Length: 523
Ligand code: ME8
Image 1 (cartoon, helix red, strand yellow):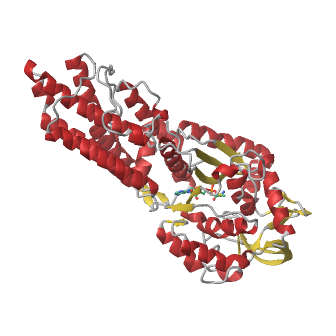
Image 2 (cartoon, protein in one colour):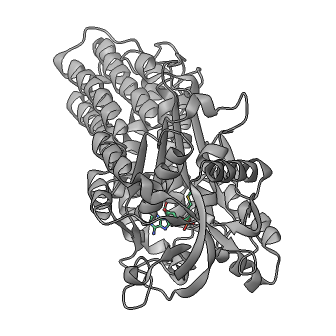
Image 3 (cartoon, protein in one colour):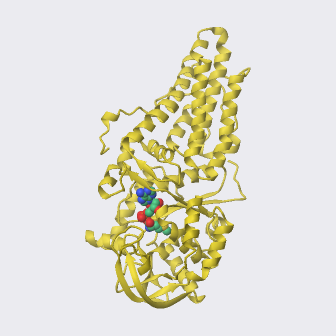
């Protein structure tokens, strides 16, 4: 591997609330982060990938109360559900941060004290409204017909003394920062949304809750009667998770190279609260906040009952990990809303995975086993059709690198499938089964099979970030002895890496076809 020592790459997911079990929405963001982390590692970047859980606040406290357990016990149980799902989904995070950990609490308190000492925090009466599901404060004028403007659920009236962060001071700085850095908020529609929001006046941010109301939080270091507002606590995970304030931590290498992947529901907290908090303590904002779209389930908003229909562990049991990862990234352009349905999933598996990719792989390998005793034949005397496959693959490789830079996962997969289709077309055109009939055509048959297998080697390399287990399987069956994860896309992505003379293995189907009648809608 050739490390790219100039730049580092840091990617994060939101830290998920542990009031409930993980669902497909959580899986979506985490898979997306895993894909870019794996891809960047294959490009030679030092990568840090952080995910974790958001464990404080009223929502979690309430969930624990309803179960009749104390909040910490509740968190300790729920966090395992997230961690075991990430294992099953092959998530390659470098660390997992829990906001109840001491390493996080210390950083939150240090930042609060720092802001207080700089005069950025003051105390005042707060009269307003609070939405527990969103853990957000609202003023009277924000409400829509007396309800939370984000989720349209009931809000609770609050009137109490609280601490405030002088967020309003940073309004013009923030607008300028967003305008100067056109990739800070991505995609551009989200950037416009925030610039629109910032045309109104930005208020100061209430960052505390009196302990008499909420105990489950991080104590404010300069006033033991209060805990920190859960969003102020949570956002800090992005720097506490890489050791901000600690010597010899990854922080100095990875900040501010961060890309925060989030859903569009939490855009304001990440693009308004977070950069102003960072500015307040003298840190540079992250490189990018990418807000993806929202999944509905068979046309409906996700609810408790629908969550069961698409419970991630059940989806993995039914379809396999890589098919789930593939579907979520291929079906919907990253950034747009999407709809999950079992028929759409089955269609993708049967057509893209079993038919296009699976068939190409097993056809090519079977012929090497049958006609060359499994030994990869050397190529000789390339014809135009052979060079065509090579050129198309090389072009796709360059395209994919640009598409991944924009996190355009569906397009990158589209480019990989251009190679898959070209491979299938190449086999149809060169008709190796006909070449096998005459001894004199052996060298030509060898060339055709070498070219096909080489395109499959590139496909395995390019698909590795998206479908890690499938790629590993393809890689070993193609007789590649080097560790797939130590490859470098630039060097090993060049045509001709497949070694003649190496032994391939008899193919086992990569993706068995799924009979739709055997899958109940409840999966
Ligand atoms: O908001 N479609 O946590 P959370 C797509 N703790 N993505 C979805 C989704 C859906 N239907 N539902 C959820 C929180 N998500 C805070 C974050 S970060 C400092 C604190 C994903 O458990 C999406 O990434 O409510 C969304 O932003 C996140 O889950 C919200 O997770």
